[in-house]
Image (cartoon, rainbow, N blue to C red):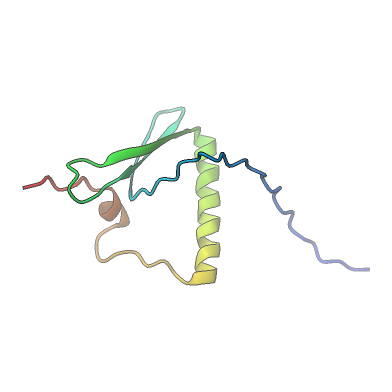
Length: 106
């Protein structure tokens, strides 16, 4: 009997979701790093706010961050395969669109 080789599927992580889990919407991120960790600040920039408000800070090891990057890329590829390409805005870079400092109020 000849069976096709199947790629091993990663184990499913059965995560517990606390009943009081707070879900946040963020639309801006700042990424910094040291030799031993990457720091990801996720913030919310809304009209009328002078400064974006950080909603969550995630600190990861470089290895953890690279594995997260790989997992995110794989999930975006699956999303686009199902729903179509995610189009990036206009002529400027994505980093410029998402991570530029807010314009001060006049």
